[in-house]
View 1 (cartoon, rainbow, N blue to C red):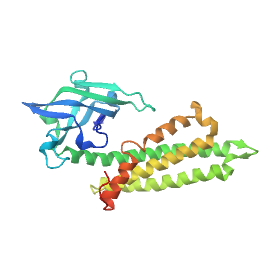
View 2 (spheres, helix red, strand yellow; view 1 turned 45 degrees about the horizontal axis):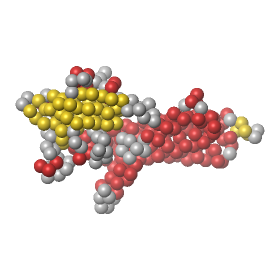
View 3 (cartoon, rainbow, N blue to C red; view 1 turned 45 degrees about the vertical axis):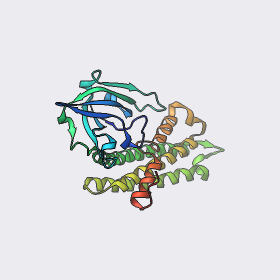
View 4 (spheres, rainbow, N blue to C red; view 1 turned 90 degrees about the horizontal axis):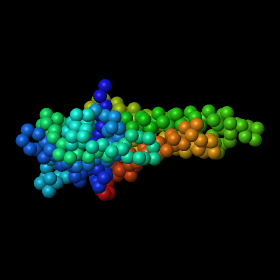
Length: 271
């Protein structure tokens, strides 16, 4: 099995992908790539990377989405020879990194698809990523919910299980309902993707709803555990921190809402 990283995000452009600065220039029988990526998860443990770089300067294309290309980079072969990977110390143990490209030579056969059409390929890959991350959220949410329910049933205070109190019971019940609803959208998005049909709206909604449902499950379980939620032995504080990530990455909640507002509801572009 070979692991693969995804090199898209850059320090100065963030979600504005079309303004990325990593450049790939054709020189003879290879491309020479220079630039930097950030928040590249598990790059140090991956064999390959799908790298998005600009092959045509933005002032020479009709649309900002043109002139971007995708390359398959062999990280193991080029580590220390045009590729440098530095770990980023973050709030959670996500093995995220920043990756630097210094005159990295890539053969033309490593170009994915057509030169200049990479943005479209990346968008298709992002739909799959959002569906996958949404299901990951659901799994985390259900783990958290199970922990909260078990503790609510076992913990006795004032001679009664705390789960008997509506203030404990209702947030857990609402989190369950939200997780089940998010799971249905995830399944619909996955079915559309598998059938080769347009799934952008469903993939984005799945990511949005799953991330929020999981966060609500994390909050409900954290509150249920009370002071013991801070104790590492229960793993609640760790999963609570991890659950917060999903509202920021791989696409933020606001970017999903902007997509739905513009592309689904037909309103003017908001950014």
